[in-house]
Structure formats: C-alpha cells, structure tokens
Image 1 (spheres, rainbow, N blue to C red):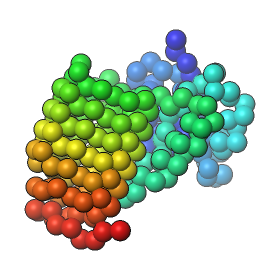
Image 2 (cartoon, rainbow, N blue to C red):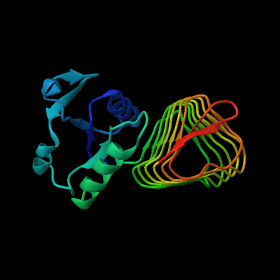
Image 3 (cartoon, rainbow, N blue to C red):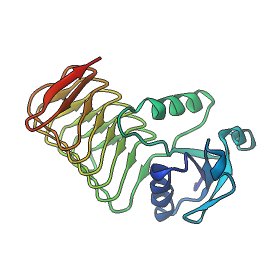
Image 4 (cartoon, rainbow, N blue to C red):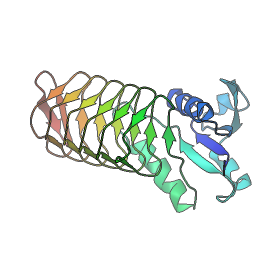
Length: 213
C-alpha cells in the first residue's frame, strides 16, 4: 500500500528526501517545517504545509513520516525529532534512492535513508534513523548504529563498527576492522586507521583525536 508521506523539515536534507521518495513512486503530501517564513511556500513542487502542530490533522495510521532533519556536526536534533514522533505512534519511512546499490543480505532498519549512488555491500547492518548520504560506500560486514550520518562520499571498508549517534564527515575513510565509539565526530577527509573511543572528535591523515567529551 502506497501510504502518503510527510517530510519533517524543509531544508536541504528534507528536499533530498522528498525527491528520493517521489523518484521511488511515493506520494509526498508536503513538508512540515518550524521556520515560519517557509510556511505556504512551494519547494521543488512540494508545499510547506506548516509546522508539526499540523500532525494532529494526520493520524499515525494515515501517513508515514520521513525525517528531513540533517546533520553537519551532531545528530542530536535528528534523533530528538525521530524519538518524539515515534512515541506519538508515527512510523518513519525507510528511504532508498533508486540509484543506490543495496546487497540482498544487508539489514536495513526502519527510518534509514540511503541516498543517490550509495553502495551497501553484503552483511551490512544499519540501525534506525541513520543517513547513508550521496555516494557513500559501506563495505561488507559493517555494523552502523542508530541515528548516525555517513556524509557524502564517506567510505567504510569491511567490518567497520560505528556506534550510535556518530557523524562521519564528507569524504572520510575508515579502514577495515576499525571500531568507532558512540557519539563520535569524524571530520571531513579524515583517514581513520585505528579504533576511536566514544564521544571523540578525530581529524587528519591519519586521523588523530582532537578532543573528547
């Protein structure tokens, strides 16, 4: 059944999600967006209906939601929206762009978003509400936690483990078998060649720990 979808957030990531959904043949009802200046506007042929107070007009059994909140450093805002609306009984759409390559044995949890040109290889496990962004590569046996964001062009070699709530920056590379602790930020372009403890910021080639929280 083609249940219609509301996209939460009308920023850049929300626009990408709406486009991927429509290219997959899904019905997108519109955006729900906190920015009052965008209410009523048409963005890429999809209307900004208003704020998420309008959800009362759309009961959980009538629509699915798509999380259009992106992240550049922290995935916390995205996680908060997802968990709050899940508690309200809403289902989050799993979004897979038609050009993504996803192995049959990959395990994709609800609310995961796999963008254009991404490659997901065999035996990969991806936790709920995680973004695998444009052109990212996740090789065999990787395990990625919930509420993560692998940014554009990030590369995970085989058997990498990424904890919950991590942001892996644009063009970052993680070699095979490395573990990334929960809550980490891997900077854009970093090359990670050894395990990273939880809540660390790593950057550079090879990557070094810059700070921890």
